[in-house]
Image 1 (tube, rainbow, N blue to C red):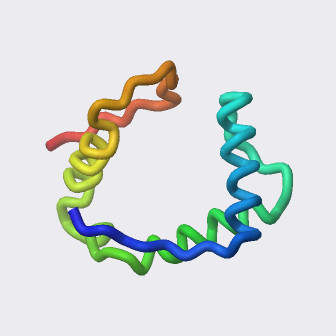
Image 2 (tube, rainbow, N blue to C red):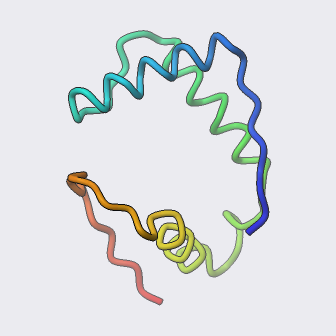
Image 3 (cartoon, rainbow, N blue to C red):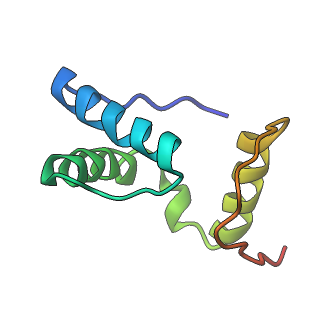
Length: 88
């Protein structure tokens, strides 16, 4: 797969580091400051512009395959919050 670069300021990295650390410690993802939401939305805006795949007619299949590739070989005690059933 092609690589995509996302740019973050050092402040965004620090804010997101804390968000992810809290998620890792508590197993819940929630915001405690607007900066956390803003940093994620800045990433989302960059992702929106990064690939046309999101607008493809077979997006659900593309998403399923991407998830499988990303998670390949992953072992953890991660609990799935919601399992989507994706038809191929």
